[in-house]
Image (cartoon, rainbow, N blue to C red; front, side, top):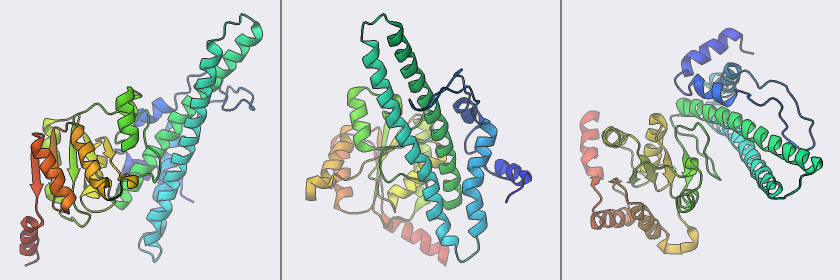
Length: 323
């Protein structure tokens, strides 16, 4: 068991990952009484201390790597830690669904013209439930985001959910499923699901390994377009994984455009069409397959500023380094 001094060490090591202001806001506890279920009695109990919540989240994930590091179990640490972050994510998803149900019920009650005291009490209860769930959701999302940042620092890879979108009220690097993103744009839904920044597209082969030129180019674009949103083709290795790691380290929202398998052999080309339809302000394409060639052609036709990296450029550099 780690002592309180250990907590202080964790806090110092990870202090730049998630600001204390995020936790202070998420754990403010401004409701006089909270109620997370219609089966629970309202409570005036305090929210957890924000600093303690931040430190506890860090310890949960970081101590696992400290325990298994430099041992034969080290390769398993990232798999277990991924599941720990995912636990926060799953609970947040559950709360979000409950909040949606509560908000829908509250809206239905608000439309009923009933002056009775019983109706007024029912409206009050539904509103308290909705507000309490919203408060709880912000707190769990904040812990999830911080746990994900610890995971990123320890593994060098951004944490990514296998299903659903990862968004939060204080999220620095949203990872958003493409369908959610497009639907949100079309319907003017929540800002968390529809980043408004100019879109920069990145695509490339899954075997691409030259991360330095890609990071350098993305940094240059971000200097000119500080509020950019990054759109990738959602591969878990190569170009997309390198770009996702850059976005996580820079706090840039990222939209992962996965293939729609129902489209069959045309799925990749349909995704390219969707990416260009976003009117990106710039695109970076690393050598890969015919899909990258097609995307480059579409970008040129649409007048999108384009940077193309070819493997041969960097193979020579890597060869000279090895020599």
